[in-house]
Length: 107
Image (cartoon, rainbow, N blue to C red; front, side, top):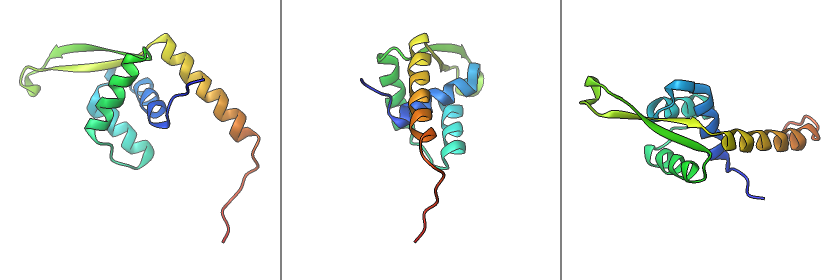
C-alpha cells in the first residue's frame, strides 16, 4: 500500500480548504498558517506536480489578470481519486491516534 506523504496530505487539504481559490500563493499561505512553517515555492510546485501525475489533483489555467502582467494563474482541484486517498489517510490516522491514550512529555 502506497500512502500519501504528510506534505502531500497537507497540500491536498489546503486545496480542499481553498476551494475555487486554490493557486500557489494562497496554498502557501494556508500551509504556513496551519504548520507555522514557511514553505518554499519550489517544494510546493514539485509536490503539486507529483500529485497531479498521480491523478490526485488536476490543474487548470484561470483568466489573465493585469496585476500579473497578463499572465494566468494555475488553479488546482482535487480529483475523486484524491478524495479517496485523503479519506484513507483520515481512517488510518483515526485508527492510530484513537487507540492511544492522551499523553504529555515529562522530563
